[in-house]
Length: 243
Image (cartoon, rainbow, N blue to C red):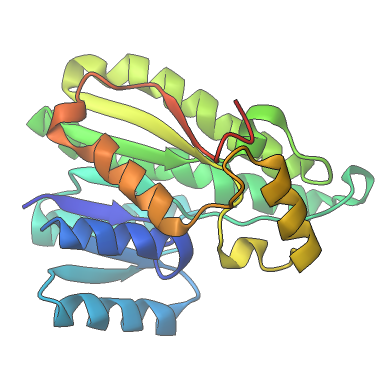
């Protein structure tokens, strides 16, 4: 049984990943920061279905909290074999209106958190000569999004971190890959008007927008033992809107 830690997994893409990996027979670690009720509900649901799962409250933008979470996981379960860095925030803001605090919060939540969690996960993975790190970026990290400069910059940083770390850890039996979602049906996009959604569908070659399950199934594929020759890649799950 593999141990799978998914950050920001109380809802949305993270929750979908938790369900897919639990169905696969993995032990799932649910990480949340503020959404405790949603995390408890998810854990109870997974346990009812027979899955093994645990819940960890941790602000992954805090290096000290990340260390404590990984120490607890190692003490109780040995370590995380698979790390999915999914936690993050988004904000729609004109570049000239982004404050220092908003910039710092975005970088901390969407980029620094990935660094902290990878750093904490790697010693165990290196010791066992196996690991899967899957980072969730965004299509805006690849091509940039107007009025989302700070978000785009953070997600582009995730892509750079993924590629560099993959080169460094390949000989240790660890793969590091990145999933770059397009428009996905999550709370993060709940501010979009129905006409905005329809316009995005028209721009997308498949004529649809994605679901959290689309991302989760891609993560499961990248985590498979038979995917060991795939590393340092950015997998666009976007219906063809970015090619």
